[in-house]
Amino acid sequence: MDLEKSNDSEGEAWEISKMPQRQQKRSSWKIAKDLPTSFLYASKGLSYAFSTQRNFRIHVCFAFGAFFLGLLLGLNKSDLAIMAITATSVLVVELLNTAIESVVDLAIGKQFHPLAQIAKDCSAGAVLVASISSVIIAALLLFP
Image (cartoon, rainbow, N blue to C red; front, top):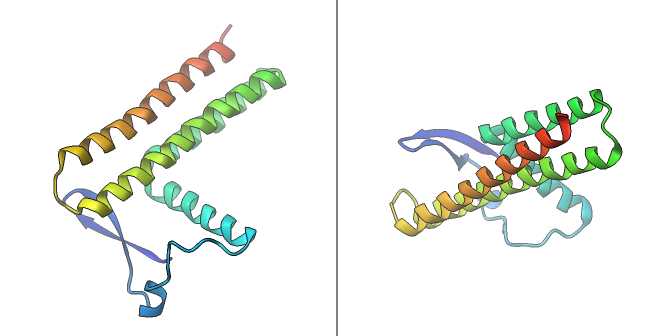
């Protein structure tokens, strides 16, 4: 799906660009027919998150940095695995946060609703908790 940036009063938004009518009517609810198509959809999601979500890029950089530092310090496989799982969990929560925010925006548009704010704030809070946990685990593993 081709997406085009547009600026609005609430920051960066992404809209469907001028796609042919037939392509716009493609049913997003359909289940992928085969495994490669499933991977294609997943890679589009990762690409979207990486290209539009600053915090996702920051988490990816910190994850690679921590893992590289762990390799440099000679951590054992178990400690590296713990770091990898921890970093991955932060990225997963960040992806879920992005999905929740997108669905809320889709549902309410540019209107304000207190329940939408709660959903967005709680999903952002989940990312914060995962991030703090990840920093604590990295510190415990990397520092003597």
